[in-house]
Length: 79
Image (cartoon, rainbow, N blue to C red; front, top):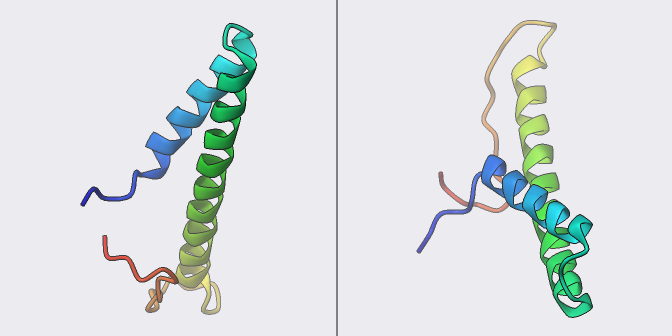
């Protein structure tokens, strides 16, 4: 089974989709398919950013001192 794509890979895919949609060179059906794919990728990126934000907040939390606390990954995936 393949690992989840990393954020940067998803962002590159999303940028490519935006370029394809902006070009006006694809059909309406292809545009709808690309749009749907882009929405899914954007949601994945948003979740990744939210996870990263929570981890940073845990690192910065205690009285301005850097500390690391256990972070329970909501989806339970190991990396």
